[in-house]
Length: 489
Image (cartoon, rainbow, N blue to C red; front, side, top):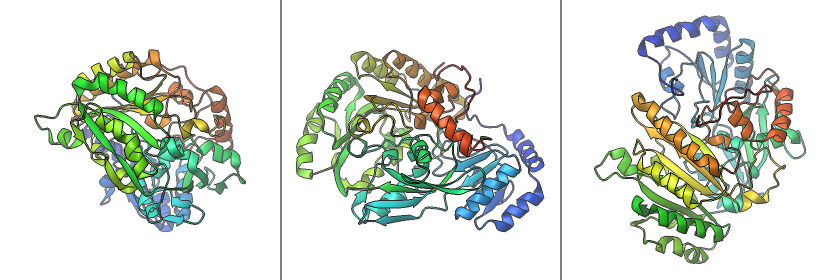
C-alpha cells in the first residue's frame, strides 16, 4: 500500500497539469479571477508551486487553482466556483494538517492566509480573529492587553483547524480547550450563505463547530473568551532515555496531584537543535514540559519537584511571556519534513504503558520523531460531555505519536513504527480518538472521535448545512460509515 500523501513521480506532473486544465473551464476561471479581490493562481503561474505546498512534506498535490481570499466576498465566490464546477474544495488556514487537508488534487484550494486580523476587546476579555490567523499572530495581539486563550504548542499552527477539532495547548488544564473558549463563529456554508453561530443564533451549529471540524462550512472569523495571562513559569526539563522509567513514574504521580494551574506533557524526542543538525550526540531523551499560570511565587513552589527530580541534565524552565512560550517548540515542527500522525487516549500511565513507549523510543527510525504524553482532566473534564461536539473529556491521558523524517523513500518504515506503537497501546485505551491528531485513518476512526450519539447529531447538522458534502476534505462526517479497520492495522 502506498503511504499516505506519497509524492508523485516527476513524469506524472505534466499529466496532472493537463488533467486539471481539462477539468476546469478556462472561462469559469477567468470569471472567478475578475471578481476575486485576492490572488488566483493556476498551474504554471509564478508562485503556484509555493502556494500549493503545505506544512507536511509528505503531501505533494496539484490543485487546479489556489484562491487567496482577502474577505468574506472572496470566500463566497470561491465556494460557489467549486460547487458549480463540481470540484474538490480544500480549505487552508495554517496548513498544519498532518493529513494534508489544506490542499487537494485537481481541485480548489481556498487559502485563508491573507485573513489574519485579530481585534481584542480588553473590557469584555474577548477577541475576534479571522480564519487565516495563526496562534503566533493571535497571541501577539492579545498579549498587548495581558490576555490569552488556549492555543496549540506551535506558533505557526492556524487557529481554525486546531479550534474546530478541539484544541490542546499550554493552558488546557486551567482554561480548557480552544473550542471551550469559542463564543461564536461566522461561516460560509455550502450554498454560499454567510451565517453566525452563537449561543443565541444557530446554537446547534455552534455546538457542532466546537469539535466537529470543518464539516459545515468555511469559518471566516472566530470569537474567543480571553483570560488574564501575561507572564508564565514554563519550559522543559530533559533526562537521558536510560532514566525514562523512573522519570515517567515520577511524572505520573506529580500530574495526579498537580493543580489546574499547571499544564503538563512528557515527550520522547531528540532535542530539535540536535536532531536537525544530525550531530553525533543526537540521541532520544525524555522531556517533561510544564506551564504554570498564576502567581509566580506560588508557581516556583509548585514546579520545584519537577525541576528537582533526577536531577535533569537540562533545565530550561524560566519566567517568560506567554507568546515566548508559544514559540518554544517551533523548532521541533519545521515545515517541509515528511510527517505522519496518530494518537490514543489511555486510561492510565501504567508501568506497562511506560515500557511500551520506552521500547518504541529505542526503535525510533528518525531522530526527528516524537511521542507526546499529555495529562488532561482539570478544566477539560469540568465541561459537560454533551455541551460540545468534542468528546472523551474523561480520558486521563492523550498520547500523540508523530514520526517525522526527511527522506520520502523511507516512509513505510516510519509509518509502520507509529502504527506498531499505536497497536501496543490499545489494551490500555480509554476509548475513542482525538480527531486533530489523526492522519488519513478511515471513517471508523472518525466515528470513534465522537461516539454514536454525537456522530448522529453531527450528521444531522451536516445534512442541514452541507447535504452534498462539499466540505469533505477534513475528518469527514458521512452517513454511510464503512466497517474499515482501525488505525494501526
